[in-house]
Length: 409
Image 1: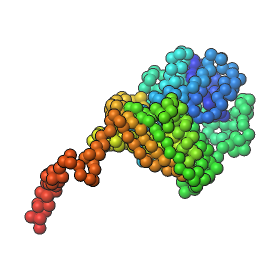
Image 2 (image 1 turned 90 degrees about the vertical axis):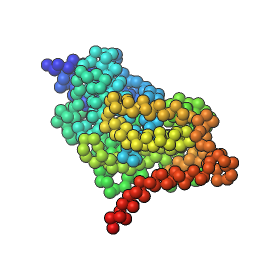
Image 3 (image 1 turned 45 degrees about the vertical axis):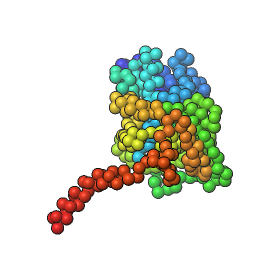
Image 4 (image 1 turned 120 degrees about the vertical axis):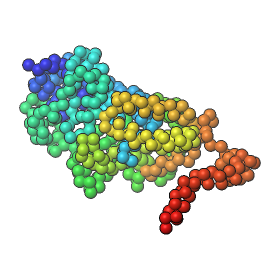
């Protein structure tokens, strides 16, 4: 008899997690609680409830939670305050969703008295690390069941055979070989991995992309967009106040229309391998460009440069699953402190895959002083003669070194 009496399963209602649900019941003979998160992936979630009921899950043990606002407000926005990019390109759409899912899994274990959580991440990927690091950080005593590291259903054929044997519905797409890609979606992005993409030399098929038109087919007329910032977060689009989730939804719509946010990347996974993935992050691409523009006029130079120095480390923390770590929280405190002056508006032009900044201003926090920066007569605001001493002092160490080299010749 298993020591685990009740487990909370991160449940999508798809084939893999439906097999896991039945496998948990058979292998651990434990009570199962299902948790399905609405993170804006655009799928109907009610079927997950009906499937769980078919497996004998008690209605009180089925949790379907709308987490869209919390996801953008408490996870996406804080990450974008740091201008976070992993390995120069990836906007971390999958990575940033995992700490919220881990948090909610632990919330539900506390609510239901469960002693374990279970997830459908494979033993090859990053998600197993992200889920489990988060869970242990929030509840050190939690037990974790990762079926892909335990069972022998390691091929699609074995998985489907198990499903058919146990009366688990198998969609026609799986019978015909399944979707050509492994996909993950939320309000920030949609990702594609596997199958055709496992050859890094092969171009992704145009039919793969779901959120964005190709830049070639995007409108021939540019579209202008005004974004208003308060404390580093977008609060309004074109003058209309919106909630965080509404803002990202609208930016995705506009970005997708103009072919913005496609990425084809070979990245370094935390577990050691290189992996090729394709991503669509239309709204996030606009957010990043606009946020940097807002900071360009409001942040002190050295503060901005310090943020840029720290950002790769912060990005790795999120990518590798350390959202709930003390070091990420400490960095977040610093980042959030820098954003108190990031207030104002940015105007961008969206055109055929490009986000072009065309204007920015802050009535309260702009550090741009036109009376000093002007090429015209500044009426004594800046004495150009001061530059000579500045340059000589900064050249002093190089002049000393050059003199030494000359003496050695």
